[in-house]
Length: 227
Image 1 (cartoon, rainbow, N blue to C red):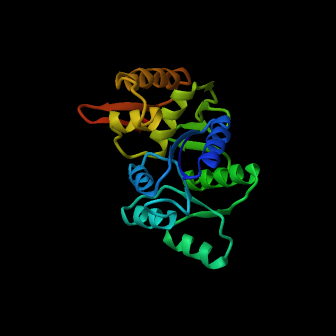
Image 2: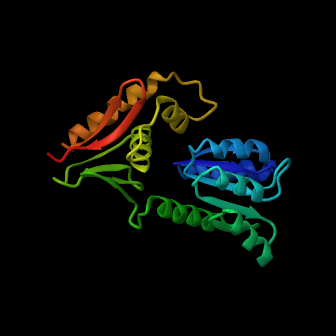
Image 3: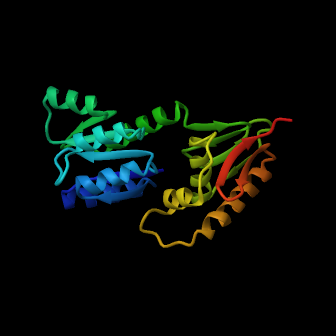
């Protein structure tokens, strides 16, 4: 799962990045509001964590503009302000949740898990499409028709997670590359094809009818043929 963190306080940002990466989140960090807005508008993030007090543009304005652009990414606001009016204003701007500094790490992680479940419309940690179920905790792929399952490697899991989250849409190689490897990564785009091949083999191993289809000249989509 890829997170966006927009936080200008360097020590806080470094600590949060370390904590989140230890929990197996991929994190992209930006330290000013303008960069944060451009990042969230890319629509590649599963959750955005926005500090309120930022240079150039505050977190409220990032959330407001992102929602105006149609971005649906769940937003968790971080702020030193605890007044009810500030919380209400943040939620009205488009935030989904609010956490007041200082906070406990376990509360932050719990709120992220809750936002993730809400985004995926699941309470049991299972993402589903066609005849497959993907366990987000164990990274296990299961064919619901026969019970066969297999553990996925990290990038295979991220490929399938992204496809399920965007079911019904065609995802380009650029979208997949940025989502899985990040903006700053110089990985070759053929990595996408390599991991598509690996993931297809795992789907074949569990004998799923759900398939990853290549759309010539466009990208990839998830399809289920129950015939």
